[in-house]
Image (cartoon, rainbow, N blue to C red; front, top):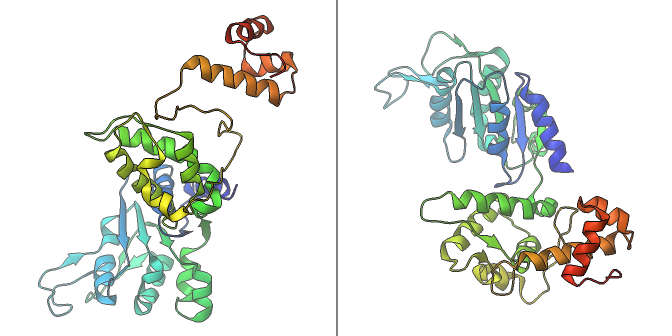
Amino acid sequence: PRFRAALVIAAKSARTHTPVLIEGESGTGKEMIARAIHASSPRSKLALRLVTCAGASSGQIESQLFGHERGAFPGAFDRHVGIIQRVEGGTLFIDEVDQLPLESQAKLADAIRSGEVRPLGARHSFRCDVRFICASNTPLKPMVEEGSFREDLYFAIAPVQITIPALRDRSSDIPALVRHFLARIAEQPGLRGLGITDEALSLLSSFDWPGNVRQLQNALFRAAIFCDGDALTTAEFPQLTNMLGEEEPRRTSSPHDGIGITLYAEDGNLRPLEEIEADVIRLAIGHYRGRMTEVARRLGIGRSTLYRKLTELGIDNAA
């Protein structure tokens, strides 16, 4: 629900030109959300540029953002047009804005508020029409309160705030994410389509994923490279098995997990369709407490077809 709420805010903000602040732990998908906002915005046909504040000095980040004139500082042998001017009309995604040096924060706040940029060493400012989306791994409000982040910049970049929950707080999404990433991995040169056993999926759902979605994707990619079978098993995730120890993996259930239906045999191969179909019918009979009319309706078949399948598959009506 928290992730769906974040998507609703992102979808609504995409229709505006208002700056957006996306907060969330590293690897939760902040850049993906920023790209989705831009792609759904009136600026989608124009450029989206990314810049990160991590590890940059005040001079470096100001030159990168605002540009500089020749001779503005030692080593400035040529004029440099900043990324804000180069992305005119489009969207600028500033990642790890919490790492922006304090002395550079005032200049960025002025640029966002006024819509003008002044390159280092320039006498005049330049008008710019840019949509700003900023991301932070650390919540900015506490940083403002302790004085390590300027309040004026916080209010300039955060008219709209989106918080992306950690993967451990939305573990019911892991099965869908696994299917998505396996489909993407299958498109990579030298790799192929793979399934995943229920035991392996339970293992992945049991892990807390401190690196969030990015870590899950990397784990699946590594597992796919070394998998010799047709489906990933727990053997492809030895590090997770070691970290979790001998604990029984917790199964994160949702209405869409297909809990109770085993798709893969112990050797990693898919079970025969007849066996899976029998399990689905048994599950439906139990779920709807033997109300065969309701079972048939939910399975999308007629009652006569349902009873014929019960006979063919050797299923007791009271299963």
